[in-house]
Image (cartoon, rainbow, N blue to C red; front, side):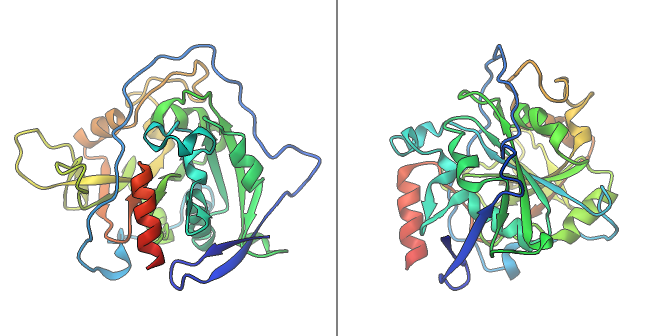
Length: 317
């Protein structure tokens, strides 16, 4: 039995990792590629300054309707990066398993996904990736003998130690995902984000290919990434003075974004190509197909040992 701290009270609650069938491997194995095509990394985000108060930190999407896949929405959690700036901590531990108040960063997302009713999550792994399925197994639950609706089934998309970048990794995992899926980075702390079901339902019924959650700009990214107007994400020209916000790494995506004309990598990424996500988003933004909402809850991209130490100190206060 392990224990996790609840965001609201800081008290410890137990969670349990189980396997539905101990005779079967928990990891969905995918062969490592024979070649890599190096490309620039997506810009990593970091902790932001305190934001003005806002209810639950989420500006929700409007609309209604049933989500794709008969109501089932999947999730993909990014956990394959090397975490160079987190060394020496990441020399022996993958960054998503580093702990905030004794709880792995990745686990905060898993807890929120269960509460949101998400049934299945795919986790991509790379550097020291075998540690993640060993830790979480194939089923994550907060209580022993939890009912199925209180469980989150897990599968894994393996990448080499030099991971495929965000879009390349998503493409590799695409056969395990539904038509609509949540995306979140496993090294981002956002305990107030609850993966709202109504947002997924509205997105599934919309023409959007992506919906991003943006945050006020942290000190290390003062220029931000994208504009926001009338519920749409904007790829603003460099000389445009309208405000920009930082992409939180949390999004809703559709499989269509990872096919032509937006993306030219074959689904499943059999060649192991490295590809960032930002170019796909910008292409879709040009056609008005990327929505956005502002998230003002707690949010930290734990990119350095100093940020992790500061976060642990802040959350324990």
